[in-house]
Image (cartoon, rainbow, N blue to C red; front, side, top):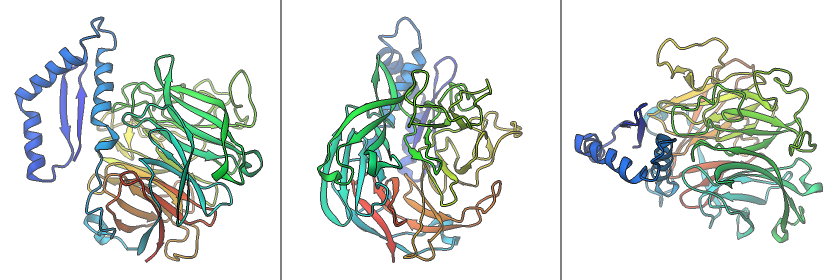
Length: 456
């Protein structure tokens, strides 16, 4: 169960909930919706949260930020089910889906709120973990060995923190890796993408990380929808996906404003610099000569593209976290508009009916609130050890713990062929990783454990 708190133009508070699951939840909703509680919330909002904002500038926005920080606190998330019994459950719509039997093999533990798993190019044993609170740590598959490479001073309320990592394609030679994290810059919450150099790329365990070079900074109006993934494409360019900036419903209208980085997928060349920037804009970017958009834009219309990856064909597969009703997966093509906030997945959002459809690209797959509440994108499993899973795209839902695999369409513009269930697990699946052998790994945000998807 989750609650959303919205403001009308007069800053009046409305409380909404998703599907009520049990009598206890119903009593909470009834309590929150009572007139007295509304009055108390409003008084608290006015007298406590906004007491210092007497100039009335950005009053609503300040309250919204505080509510996101409090209600979206990451340590409040709890996995569904018995966390001591690591067995899949097949319920709801999963009961009618074809099943692929897997096991989850614990390969490492001891991490705190992991947000990303990345293996260096060519590696199957050593991996790096980003932790939300700011630590970059290493681990070894099937060995109880971990260590810390770097500790950053980050903002980590709500969906902020150290959120993503990518190795340079030539990491073995140049030792370069890239981090995506949130910090204060001139008093403003700011997402930073920066380049770091590892002293011994072939010996990560004994390496030191030095010499940060700032690639890009983006001011974040709210502490949620900051996205976080970084990924190099087969073209050797870095793809940086940003969320719409946060709160809910895209109040800044960033999703449909490609003149801002927010709500867009960017494509940049980190091997060169130009015009005082820490990167160069590739000359074949789709909007390089179009004043409609910043030239870094590769595609736009995203809400919160938390996780994305490239499939064996070089296609960019992106999971976009939904708002009220729908989670979605897209194959991202150059120059396309993926619809937020006109649409949520393939459904009208603003307006709720008869919205504009022309020029918007449909997702290849979507699912509703009966199956989950926050999609976590993954990878194509590319290993013959699980033959039924080989070649399929694996993804999950952070809240429900469900894992699925889908057959990606052969042609662009087509929906996913078929979706399989891998079961509902008592985990908070914050991210996936893939080693050089094509095996896929899962991070549990709650326990800090790392699992590998193995045969049953």
